[in-house]
Structures are given as C-alpha cells and as structure tokens.
Amino acid sequence: MANALADVQTTFLNLDGQYNLLLAACPTQADRDALMERYSAAESAYDQCVGQLLEDDDAAVATLCTQLAAINKQVSALTTQMGDMSKVLALLDQALKLGQQVIACLA
Amino acid sequence: MKCKCVWLWIAGSSVFLSAMVLAGCKTSDDAAAASSQMATTSLKLSSYYKALQTTFQETDELYQLNAQLYAKPYTSENQQLLKTNEAELAKRAQLAADLSALSESFGSLTATTTPATVASDASQVETDLDKLAALKASSTEQGALRLAVQQLASAIQQHKEREAAKAMEGAAQSLSDLFAKETSVWNSTEEVYSQIAANLAANLVDANLTDNSAVLDVALAPFGLVRSASIGDMNQKLAPVAKQQIATEKAAMDESYLNATDGMAKALVQMAQRIQALAEGKPMTARRAPLSLATVQEWVTQVNSVANTLAPASAAAAGSAASGSGKEK
Image 1 (cartoon, rainbow over the protein chains, first blue to last red):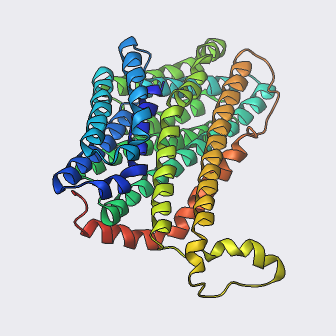
Image 2: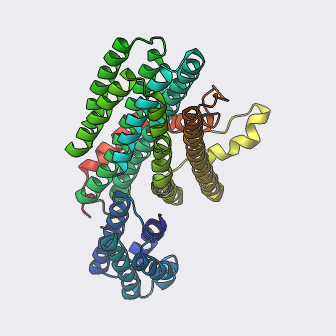
Image 3: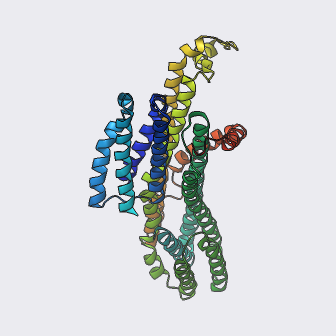
C-alpha cells in the first residue's frame, strides 16, 4: 500500500537530514531560497500523500515509484555534490517532480 | 468508503450482539463477554489513535523549532496539511471511543430479555449512532446506518437471531481490515516524527546546545555518585556518545510503536474471530480481552508520559517559534 508514500517520505527525510550542510554550502541567496523552496515542496508532497492514504497497486504508480527510488539513492548523498549546488537542486527537482506525479496518479 | 465499512460493522455488531442476548442463558453469558471485549478493544484502539495524534502535535512543534533555528521553511499551507491529517486521526479516535460506549451498552442488554426493553435500548443505540454519523459520514451513509438500526430492532422483536448473526459474519472483520489497510500510513507518520526529532536533536548536539553529561550516569550511578554541574570541554567530547544515544532511543521508539501496532492488529483480528465463532453458534473459548492489548497500552503510556513531561516547555517553545519569522523562510 505505502510504497509510494515510503518513497516520498524518503525524499523528505533525506533532505531534512542533510539540509543544514546543504544550506551552509549554498554560495548565493538565490541558491538558499531555491533549497528552502525544495524543502517546503518535499514536506508538502509527503503530507499530501498521507492525506490521500495511498494505494499504489496501479502500474503507473509502480513505475513512478521505481524511478523515484532510483533518484532517492542520489538524494541520500546530496552532500557529496555540495560543490555544485545546481546539481543538488536539479536532483531534488527530479525527485519532487516524480513525487508530484505520484500524487497526481493517486488523486 | 472506509468509514462506510465501519458504519456497516457497527450496525452489524448491533444486530449480532443483540441477537445473542435473546438466544438463551449460556449464549447470553458469551454475549456479555463479547460486549466487554469489544468495549475494551475499541477503547484501546481509541487510545492508540489519540497517542498517534500526540505525535502529530509534536511533529508540528518540531517543524516550528526547525523553522526558527535552522531556517527550514514551514509554511502555513504545510501546517494546514499536517493539521488536516491529524483531524483524520481524531475522527478515528472518536469513532473507536463511541463504538466502545456502544459495546458497553450492549453489555447491559444481556440483563434483559423483554422485547420492549430491547426496542428501547435499540432506540438508544440509534441515538448514539446519530452522534457517530455526525463525525464524517455522508448523508447517504447516515441514512443507511439509521435504516440498519431500525432493521435491528425489527429483527430482534421478530426473533430472527440466526439470520442476524450470520449477517454479522465478515462484518466484524471490516474494522480489522480497515486498521490493517491504514497501518503503513500511520507507521510512516510515526517514522517521520521520530526521524525529524532525532535530526533536530543531533543538530542541537552538534551546536553544543545540549548538556551531554547525562551519559556519564551509567558510570557514576552504580557508585552513588553524581556528575559535576559543569563538565566544561568534556561536553563536546561526549557529543558522539550523545548522538549514539539519540539513535538508540529513536530505534527503541520506533520498535515500541511497531509492537503496539502489531498488538492492536492482532487484538482486532482475535475479536473478529471470536465474534465469528459466536455467530456460528460455537461457545466462546476466551473471555478475557486479547493479551496483545498490553503492548498497545505500553506504547500509549510512553507517548503520554513524554507529552506530559514536555507540555509546559514545548508550549513555550512553539509559541516563541510561531512568533518568529521562520514560518515562511
């Protein structure tokens, strides 16, 4: 039931765990703002998923979850990419986009 | 849809238990035991949901602290999402509590066998169900439930006990199924709560904002010694031990919750099985409430204990955080 929820949860918790280091590594205010925006989006995606009490037996959702799980492996090590904040933000964008697609499928 | 299943289960329970009342002295004893067990199990389910609600409230406070201390945004929109999810838990807690009250009233029915009294009590049940229906069910569901209760009174007065009991078979399973279906979602919210708390605690240790000297107690307490009020530089040296303690305690919190959830699920399954056996005319083999409820109570006590300890301090911290500028950025 909750594989989709677990994947969206992983994105959020991985970001939460690395957030302070990432924020400190942001070279510009624009980067900090962008990171904050992703954090808020990750939290929002998680709470939306909970609210929908997910069912993920849909094939399309399963495919999205597979993709999200793959991206989450990279999200779990965002701090290794701190030297290139644009890459960090791009990875987060990929994860959040997939999370939103999961929510859309389940809505 | 899920709530509709529960409403149907409640109506089914009404039919079944009241039917048992009229089926003779031996069965009446079993019905009384079943009523008592249903009341206990339902009340524990309500306590379980309320404890989960507490973790939602603490998650809200943690987010506010994170916003204030570490610029982790917590928008009013996200706070509302969390509150909406918490409200869903509150509905389940109230439903379970009301169901427990109904079960208690069924227990009192076992003392009477007159149709007039049963009809009167069934009317009271209808009144109780009106209160339940006001929680969430749609008007369609409310109408269906009211009709079910009216049919209950009619079935009892016409002594259609067996039909009513058979109709109950499978219905008792629905509450157990509902719980099982949602378990992974609540597991997730508990995990998020404990991880967010652990992350924040570790951040506070890293920032040297904690008194880590408590970890020395394991060495000092056996000898009746107490640590010094000030341990100076040693506080930072103890940081890794403090962080290990955070990880250990977080794992224990998660395990305790999972045990409680498992215990609750088992108790609900046992209840459904016992009621099904009664519906099939078999004697009740166990009259005590399911033993696995003890693990539920253990976790509920832990959550409430922590919440009671934190109440004054967390309220002040949350108030301070809410008045800060961290809510949006």
